[in-house]
Length: 173
Ligand code: NI
Image (tube, rainbow, N blue to C red; front, side):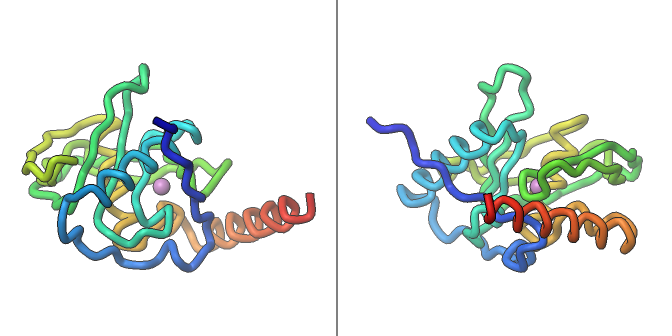
């Protein structure tokens, strides 16, 4: 069998990143094929999470792997946060849609999320540490929100012009 083909990742400030995703209607072969391609795309880009929004599919689907060994894939379909810790912490984040930019975002240190897995079975995940941060970051994508929107307007403006310039240069190269 051929390896799954990679999907192009939308880059900030692409307006499609601000699309609000719809729930997945059925966890079927179409969704499982998309999950395979999203994992291949995420691993290829050395990312720890990828939301369907970032590959221009506007359905509530996320793939994650925060393990060092890159062998603990986690699929979240139609995820809902059931609980988030009132205690928050600021940590540095990056995003495959915002290459080369890292900055501090405040997030709950723990969350409980309910979601379907790739077989359509309901799962409840108690996450903390990097996994909790990653889930919150990816769930923001499904709402059309990119992490840079937590930063000051001044920083957002700088990031926008930097990335637009980088994309123009990439097109010329
Ligand atoms: Ni991201």
